[in-house]
Length: 308
Length: 308
Image 1: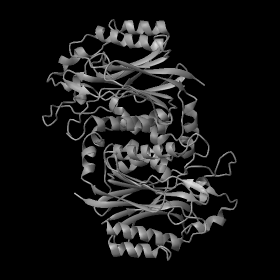
Image 2: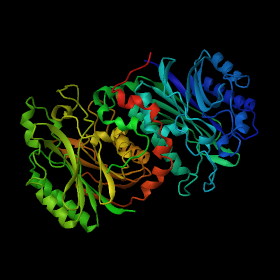
Image 3: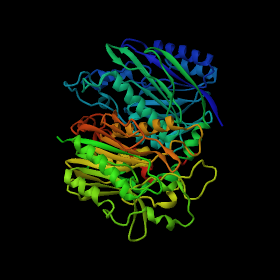
Image 4: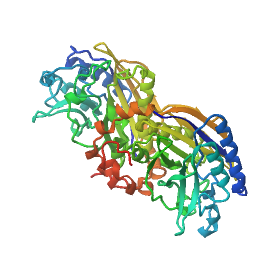
């Protein structure tokens, strides 16, 4: 069975005026650290290349098209692809995608050690809202700037491991994990940008927020017997704080690596993917235990319907 | 909005030769304690009336029919129903059900303060196995003695709260929580009998087992913005140890009450069901955020299928 050293490359705040070239140089610095530690596969955050601009409102969405990539790779990120290929390292990162048809997505990709984009995922569960809402302490306008992803939750066999992606808020939705689990996933990568304060609740500060984050990732990993690498973009960004808390979780649902700071930081773990087999063949042997005849509403009914 | 004092009545081991009358008197003692504390709704464990007999193998299943109830209530448990009605207390407990058609289920019921059985649930996710398996440190023959439940995950409005049930292993399955969540659940009750040792893994002892238990209950409560009361039958039973760890969890996914011992013990919490509203209307506003077009496999495909 496959063993890989997996890494998470946490990225500290990216200010509004920071160039993609500058960010990519920070990404490469972390990749070099990772290579020195023997990392085979490296996970970067959601929207790695830019500040988390959905905190800003603009009436004309097109004014924000400059935050989006129209090709991937492109000249600004090509040095990252080149470095990874030289190292023989696979990696994943998130960015904002503007398609030739003019559609906007919150996207992530898995890149093989040969430098090929082997899987693309577009974020399914967009949090927040589409219009300016003055009652919030800060805006979270993902529903304004992105369409819900149209890819679903695919997997790819990369470096002999079945890998899939989720992005930020997806990690709170067991449906995302289960769709990947039903496809045999062994490694779920998750990038996130998560404000340290719930913008509608003064009571929900950083400790509660990090608890919810870990709870969701650990439960998802455990209940699908998969490794998970969840990586933050974090710290102060344009005057807003986002929590750090990057973690690697094993298929038994335990945190096995955790970032200590709120800046650019590498975490790593020696992953033995044979450890996915125990859960998948016993307590979470889906074929033996799932009862789909009782799950119909999950895929049929979007919102709550209280029976009479 | 409704406020109730909710309680969990953890039950220590019930030995093979203990009578139902004896168990019911222990249940009533806990109910009296609960009444003294103002409890309005009390949760007892799975299979409250008997030892956890699926640890024993018999070739002829019918020899174990004496562990099953053919009517509910019945004379042995009538004193519990009477006491609850006198107190004006709602309650739920689990027992083994043998139907007139000869079907065997692992069942639980919710009883109103008026003493009416207002909801029945039959356990969906039966763990373990159907035949004797000598490689296990102990047997867990639920698939031998029970049929998978045929009720699905219903809810009932009882005492002005939308209540639903899960039983033991169900708590590890996010599908169970989500089915209840889609019906607006505000209180999920869970009884369990969980061995302290994984019968196929010497490495997985009581600490890991309790972690998985809490992880599953807290994630389920958080991701569906519901209170949960998870109550053990626990301690030494016929020479086998089952963990305790009864907990009450709030709709934000935090443990708000926890049993300290491994015997008969009451835990309580002042529940304000208005607290379910925040999550249900924001981060877990299903109507706003769920994307059922990407969830199809969950209800269509039982086991893992790795794509080509």
